[in-house]
Length: 160
Image (cartoon, rainbow, N blue to C red; front, top):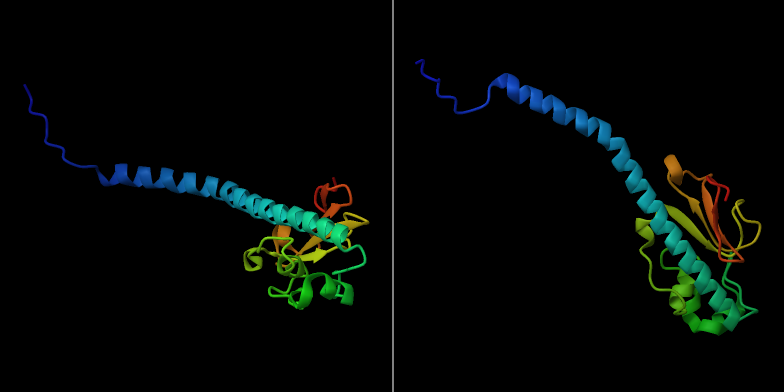
């Protein structure tokens, strides 16, 4: 009877095969993971957009003559006091945050510029719109999404 050699580890060839398989799996799955991350960021931004539109609708119900789009008018200042003129994050929606119609949103995490009212091409009339600010992908500046007067979200990619 022949003795079985004592084999305590893996050979170099076996380790290389495992590493090649892992590298192939990583290479194949990376685009999918990036796509899921992009979709999650788009979803988070669209959720914020819907919240902004709802807050603006409530604001307009309470103060029909006040406007926020472009600049804060005297009526807006009267509606919310001196807090209405502060744009903390550089977004018009900060007026709605300061007036307590909208919860604070981390604008720095979003790759979009949000506007209250106006339109972006996907909607002719909207309560809120967002435009991409990054130089590539779904966030590029031609990309926009808006919430129309019926509460439907539309964007320039899907043209829903």
